[in-house]
Length: 186
Length: 309
Image 1: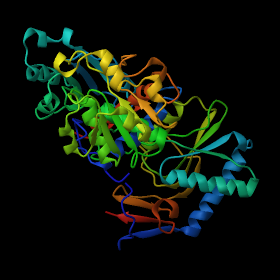
Image 2 (image 1 turned 30 degrees about the vertical axis):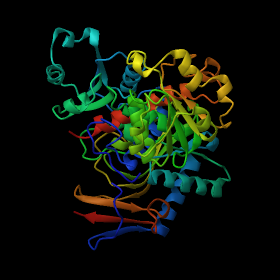
Image 3 (image 1 turned 30 degrees about the horizontal axis):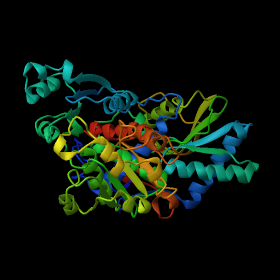
Image 4 (image 1 turned 60 degrees about the vertical axis):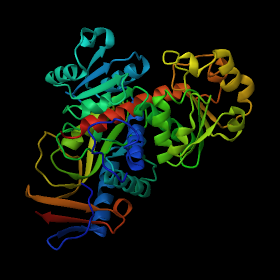
């Protein structure tokens, strides 16, 4: 999944650092608009890039609204439905969510939204901590090809893709190289 | 995490690399957190069947594996000596093949013969987890000991660990020695010369027969149970003498550094290896070991049972 992020020659650039910054800033505005009680919102990132994206959105919200929004981490590896069917076992990490969840809005944050199975696993993980008031979904890229009836609430960029194409996201903090999104054809 | 898990079986710590041991400990961190959730159960091994096959008595290890499997949503069958056909003369291999015919995915085996888990691992498609084989290895006990030390002290490399008691008959000691040395700890074995032969020095540990010399420098003392069921007279003049020479009495515990951890794999013989007051004292992490055992066993079941077969 997170192999070395070298730009191969066949890669098509999709977003640069500035485009990513603007997309996340816009998501921060939308979250602030839709959730008047920001102190009741937690941005929960899916490791590893979702966690970094959640951190950045939280920083933009602090800039815009001067509110320190809560952040968290949701591990989906142990909630996946395909353990034993993939050659490599997903690495499990500890989840961190503010408790109790009962009157909070949890916003799941991830880099690429694809089949919906990861988000389904994230919702299961959240439910094992309690029953949040609502769950929303924020993604940097929506590439389509859903296999479950799930839709995002906040999208940085809609990017129609072919099944044989791959979206690569690189962030300074997680990949130790300049922010970029690009498309690879297989 | 730099390494990937590729083993279907966990037979011992001798064959694991330091990276693999660290991967188990890091995976256990994630599973320990599951125990704090409102719903302490994840679907990671849903649909898998685990057989707890204990040919030697055990309560805590079996219960710990059973609870670990429940928390991973696996189905569990327990088979113990008294309920097994081994008492009717069936061989280990035949029993195991029958379990496999039931499509068991994971076999947790405790056996009085060293090598029994290896024997089955070579012949079965199912994952085989060694829950203690003879005086050979008890890998999950050593992993939970390592986890507890790492949790309390933040590291293992450079620490001085004293393992005290019946080393000769102890699979816990062997697995601990392999694991501790791989992660960079300094290990001293202490006990009567009949139970701690100098042979052990070949593994890269120190051997001492003077507990009072070792205690002041130790960061961790791991006390092993005197295994009455395995002892014969020639090893062991008497309980009274053992307590006098090697027991961690209240008086002796004063020699320990204030932050030295006191560990014991259980079940404790109160008043023999360790005084009751010491076992229940502030330096004791004996109950943390039990809690951590659950997380470590979840990690092992997830890693071994989760890889594609």
